[in-house]
Image 1 (spheres, rainbow, N blue to C red):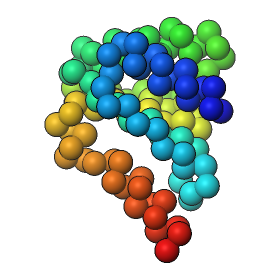
Image 2 (cartoon, rainbow, N blue to C red):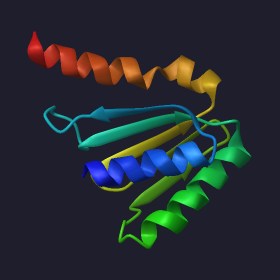
Image 3 (cartoon, one colour):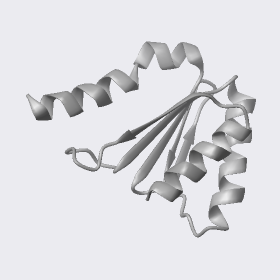
Length: 109
């Protein structure tokens, strides 16, 4: 699993995604094991990132279950990994990181 995460992060980093964060949710009551969040420069950049992920991951046997994309936010579902690509503005508005961190904290309290 870590190799898959590392490869995804490497691909995003090489294509200039910003502020890439990974969240291990495997010990939480969450619907995926890992969440990866990255900032994009806009819709064209997000589409470019998606194309690059598809090109490099499909050859490794990765299955893309669903891709939802808008101008501000794209979500890629790999089954046990969810990738969020957001503009910095929308990342700040929705603050998914805080939600994921609160799920982890609530379990320990």
